[in-house]
Structures are given as structure tokens and as C-alpha cells.
Image (cartoon, rainbow, N blue to C red; front, side):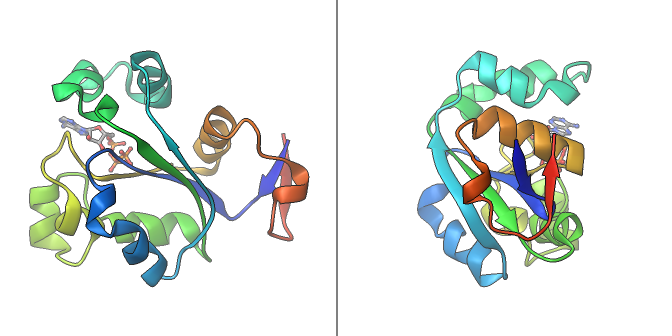
Length: 153
Ligand SMILES: Nc1ncnc2c1ncn2[C@@H]1O[C@H](COP(=O)(O)OP(=O)(O)OP(=O)(O)O)[C@@H](O)[C@H]1O
């Protein structure tokens, strides 16, 4: 199983797609090399956010107004130099009200509603990127990878 080292897994959460966020992401210099719409089941949402399963807000995160499962999530493999830092800076702080204060141009300042409806997700490190891409893009293949640097896992 191969994929480019610089890739990262990003997600546009439900109810955000129609607002032109994809062209906004491209406009910020991110290359979208894979894109797939997926409606998450509860089991998939729990697996997706498994790192947070011991947090007090885990149940809310999965169940809040069925938000995460209320429509398709757009799963994307993004590429850019200095990817992790660039994407986190583009997303802005987790809490959208903080984002609107501290990073008014960020995606969450522009598109997110509240802390449980944060519009976008990004894998927080390389290991999570690998796990999430495997989980969501099981069909990805060596031939389809585009970057010269690959990791074999
Ligand atoms: N204190 C909190 N109360 C309620 N929900 C929270 C809280 N902190 C985080 N969350 C929710 O859990 C998700 C994951 O939290 P995390 O700390 O990983 O933030 P993030 O890395 O900015 O967001 P994401 O993982 O979605 O990219 C957030 O998108 C948010 O919806």
C-alpha cells in the first residue's frame, strides 16, 4: 500500500459543500488528488474519530444532531508543501467563534457554525493520514499515486 508522503487526509463535513469551499481550498494552493463523497454510518464516524473515544465530548461529536452523518462528507487527499502546517493554518482554530476572532480568513471562520460543526477536518499527523486514507480510500493503488516520495506500509 503506497501513497505520497506529502499527502494529507482532509474532510469537508456535511452541510458545507454547497458553499464553494472546494474552490476556496484550491485557491489556497492545495492540490486535491483524490476526492470522494461518503455518508458515514455511526460505526464509521466512531472509527474515524477513534483517537477521541476517551474524550468527554466523544458521544456529542458522533451524535450531535446527527451532524456528521446528516449527509455526504467530502473526503479529500490534499497535497501541498509543508502540508500539515499549511492545512491547520487554513482551517483555523477548532472553535469557530475563536477562529472568527483570531483567524478571520480561515476556513472555519468562514464556513463553520459551532464547535461540533467545524466544517473541515484534517489529519493531525502522518500516522493518522495513513490510517484515514487506508480506511476511506481502500481502493487507492500504487499507479494512482502522483508524488515522487512514497511510503510503504
Ligand atoms: N471541547 C470540545 N467540545 C466539543 N467538541 C469538541 C471539543 N474539542 C473538539 N471538539 C470536536 O471534536 C473534533 C475533533 O477535535 P480536535 O481536537 O481533533 O480538533 P481539530 O484537530 O481542530 O479538528 P479535526 O480533528 O476535526 O480536524 C472537532 O472538530 C470538534 O468538532
